[in-house]
Figure 1 (cartoon, rainbow, N blue to C red):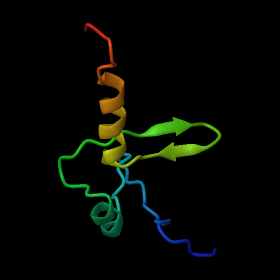
Figure 2: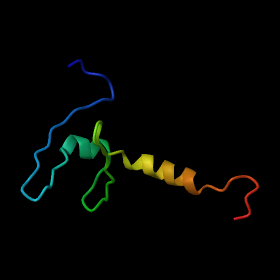
Figure 3: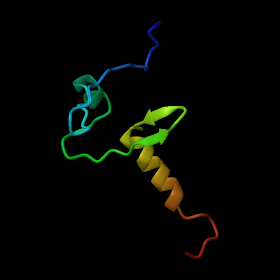
Figure 4: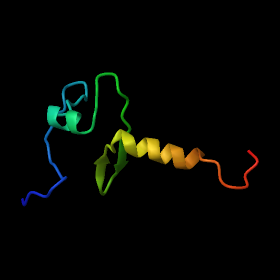
Length: 72
């Protein structure tokens, strides 16, 4: 597989309790720390996605942003 800048692939083993360990390089790259809560999105055809935390901050900001002219 040809390596592309900014794109990575890792493997993780699922334990008996259904837990996985996120590889150290991935945790460092995406600023993931013990106690962090991650959201997983699943699609039966496309698989599981774990978006970076910054994506949620942006999404929530846009979701709850006041629109010009709103009296909320």
